[in-house]
Image 1 (tube, rainbow, N blue to C red):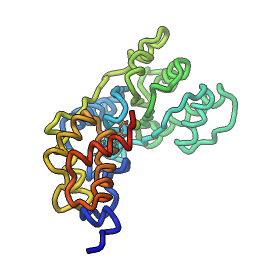
Image 2 (spheres, protein in one colour):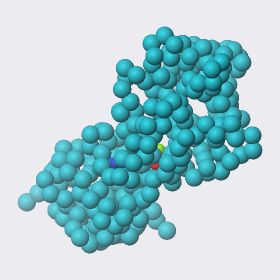
Image 3 (tube, rainbow, N blue to C red):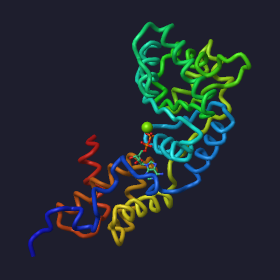
Length: 272
Ligand SMILES: Nc1ncnc2c1ncn2[C@@H]1O[C@H](COP(=O)(O)OP(=O)(O)O)[C@@H](O)[C@H]1O
Ligand SMILES: [Mg+2]
């Protein structure tokens, strides 16, 4: 029999599995993610600010996507900015662009226009602006301090925009920076995420195979153990290792992925 050409066909997937873009409805549901989603939702609903701090690859961006999905468009204008180490002016320009505002002008002029724009959206139609800053561990302290001006400038001291900051653990240190007390005091929540346990890793891999169309999970018990031993329940590492293991098994013309395929995948991905 001739070898099956495409690994997706061999395992019955309708597309490439374990990719980073996953539809909200295809997410693996677990309290690890549902609890921070609920808490962030309530924080935004109370017009407060929140943070989500966890290591790379643990599911932060996916939690943000689920949060955005949960905020009804009729009540919230959600603006998502992936932070790179921008200056105050560039950050204002970036925010201006995502909220559909003219981004030219000096820094003071931009801040003023941003304030007016955000307040107007609240006054005119009762729609609350929400600013989501992903990868916020890269944010500069002076830029973070500027967020204070954006969140609260109204006469009656109400929060005009809710900010959700998400980033890797250095963000916690950044929030303790002297001079940032005004920002940290506005944080009503600091949520975190943990890595998956061994049984959760198995559930996760089975789930991702199922949503990619496989009728049965191609990883055997040994492969599942190896995925956990190597990936340690980190979602991104587990995704990369699972995908490479499937390709490796396919290259060996095998219909089941075993621990040798996972070990080979590790060598290919992360040579020591
Ligand atoms: N609940 C989930 N269900 C399925 N896949 C997920 C889930 N959360 C994250 N992932 C996957 O795990 C990988 C890492 O998630 P991501 O949100 O990008 O992590 P982080 O932002 O913390 O680096 C992504 O490829 C994403 O598709
Ligand atoms: Mg991310």
